[in-house]
Amino acid sequence: MAHSDALEDFPQCIERLESQAVEAGVSSQTAREVLASAEYLERVIELDRRQPEFTTTFADYLNRRVNDQRVSQGRELLREHRELLDRVTRESGVPAPYLVAFWGLETNFGSYFGKMPVPSSLATLACDQRRSTFFTEQLIAALQIIDEGAIAAEQMEGSWAGAMGHVQFMPTVFLRHAVDGDGDGKRDLWNSLPDAMMSAGNFLEDLGWDGDYRWGREVLLPDNFDYQLADGRKLSLAEWRELGVTDAFGNDLANEPIKASLVVPSGHRGPAFLAYKNFGVIMGWNRSEFYAIAVGHLADRIAGAGTLQNPPPEDLPALSRDNILAIQQALNEEGFDTGEPDGIMGPNTRSAIRNYQASNDLVADGYPGDRVLESLDITL
Image (cartoon, rainbow, N blue to C red):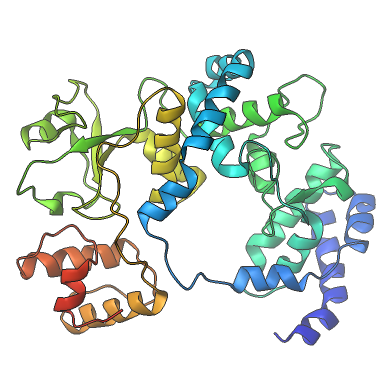
């Protein structure tokens, strides 16, 4: 839809959204007043459409998010808010360093919540055809949050996509999982750290957090390891031990009755991780393996651990969407099915790369390194 058409249709769309909100139980006064002042924000559409041209490398992603400054600030905040964080841990089972790590990754410990007016952002996206159903649901949830008195409409600011407060909850997540942690009768994730931390703990508990175990750990793999085992399969720690996998310092893995999958985010030259159940819980918050490793590693560092034993290589190229598209097309032509080429490095593409590597006597780590690109005749 062209900009002028979208602006023209916006008043009719707002009318429709108001009716839908009232039908969903929002008071007619809130629906009318909030939506009457909602504005069409062209900037939000631009941000929604802006796919990054280059995918970031794991090294770049991790080093930006888990650095010495953030670790030391996290440790300081862990001490400062120990009493609150211990209460959250008692009630949710989520250890304090993880709560601080989520806080650090989401808003740099509350220093930046986003400056966009959430009702206008969500109304703009709800009136856009691309993901109208999803954002209509988010807008109605935001109106319900205003209705319950959690925050005034004019103070409801967040990211361009509507994520809000210290821990950047989307409105539907807020409605289902936010709690009143300070006993003032409101769920205020902007101005109340107890509400934000208790809500984060509650959300993670609801997602299935297992308080008996950590997120996962860095491991060392033996020479000539079969990287096809890093395809998401879950094996017991005993089975990984039999395959020669040790902890990051070369010690035997713990003798615990849990299963883990192997994650090698930057291929065989980079670090390897065994991911436990809580890794999947973190991905329930954000569906990115990079994000889940960053949360886990930042939590470990805040708790006192050191840096990775095998840091990710910094010389790997950042692939553009066009590069990934070319890889997908080349693999499909060679008979290694990536699905419909879309320029996104998803599990199907990694699996196709792994199979291609295995067929060509390359290390089958599912990572499109130099030798894969060379073999497929792709130049960056």
